[in-house]
Length: 136
Image 1 (cartoon, rainbow, N blue to C red):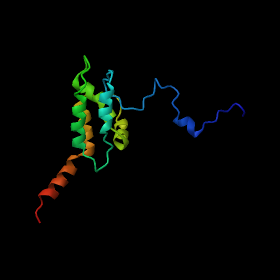
Image 2 (image 1 turned 135 degrees about the vertical axis):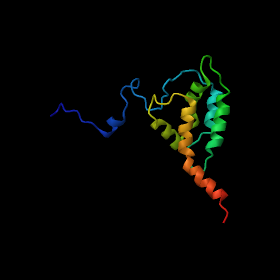
Image 3 (image 1 turned 120 degrees about the vertical axis):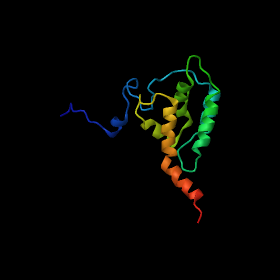
Image 4 (image 1 turned 180 degrees about the horizontal axis):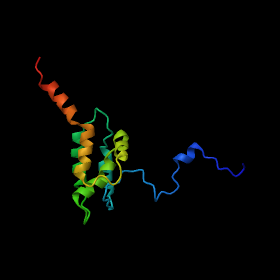
């Protein structure tokens, strides 16, 4: 009875082997390159948190502008944007990104489509269009 190992709630949240466990979104073909501080500051200065009042389209435009300021050798534009996008998110949007299964997103276009489907689904667009163009 004295040799029993008691597991506490804190034990469930502790990561024992950080090399094997990744709680962050990982694209199918992750790349590693240095991100300059100015790029990181630019990405983090206009983070998108997923609140309804935020403009997802303005965020994507800002993100694209920021991502063009860095051009690592041998890294495609798509892979670069996959690596940088997480730094431009916070709050709920960052949590959403982390729920995407690792190794399922291969290109920036796929990740952008997932983002747009979440924050601007077609049904939402059609409802909004109907509201704008209905004349009563």
